[in-house]
Length: 497
Image 1 (spheres, rainbow, N blue to C red):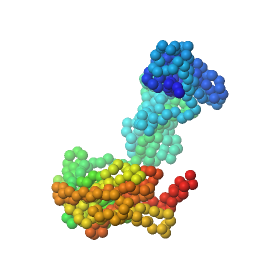
Image 2: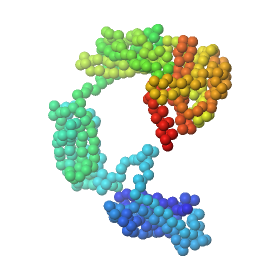
Image 3: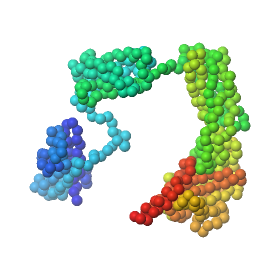
Image 4: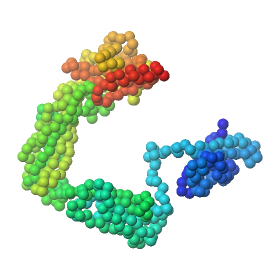
């Protein structure tokens, strides 16, 4: 087994080779390094210096076909080392090779990909802003430098402007304006195509572009009014309309008086409650959809730019889950320009809710215990004492659409109904009179699990514990069950293997 660690980097300057000891990570000198082509021709030979580095010229590594570099050999000969010389744990003679035909190590997934190394010329192009109206003038600038960021004067550049449909609009050859700077102005016609335009900068129009950028041409009007939606209510109560207020001002300081307010309020289902992190509420497979409606009509700001109104919520779109409200308000000025703002609040439920939180990360080992914590919360967000809460653990089996899921375990905290369930019950009173129950399940065989918590009103919530191939994972996504037959097909493939 070799103790030489071989690393190669290829760039415009050639191929850089580094040799280190795998035992001590010290640089190893005196190592003979030989790149070999795909046709077995030796491309060169060199010996690493005191830093364990050697560089091969770019011409030796630019070959194609049979001349392309394929293998990098590194050999440390015994006569060059001697038994008394310390090579960081190296033996008297050592050999290692590196396959250059394999894909290089990719660091882009670690967020260190960076910018590609430039060629002989590097161009930085920009415009003075990113959005223009038809009839406006775009001012484009390109700065030309070499690979070392030194300005390259006296190099003419070609600017190509293209419309959103890809058709070339104009082409300019721009001379150097000094220290590698190039500038050009283009005025859009009044009927210019709306959308995303592009600019490409070339040193050679027949070669690839050295720089590309895009900008928008749109019929837009900048905002002239500033306002924010405000409400003293931390949560919206369906039984008590909340008061929404705003203060609108023009950007130059005057109150935005007599401006019309339009918009809508939407109720969207959710299973999370911000006051109870990690808990989920409601049935996992409950079908709930957003419910939207308009804001009250006839809303206008007064002479001071102020406005307040009562918000009456629509019917809740959920039965066992929770809901959150989103208020979207738009102020409309005399020119029918809109300024939009959004306000979000949680909505108080219409009754008590049960929350479940797993006491483990992501999953548990197959055959291991699965622990959960259960709370009962009233509509005001206060934890309650819950007595007689029952739960079931169900195994999900979908071999065919006509075969129902088989419920294999059913237990009640404090009373065991299945010999395969090991559980314990803890009850203690927290501030607010809450009784928290924790049940432990185990061991569990492979398969999907669904845990159900019904309360007195038969409201339930579902959490899924998926066990496959020696690992159990806990899922809390809303939605339906796996596709019918998917699990059986996976078991058939495993059996065939």
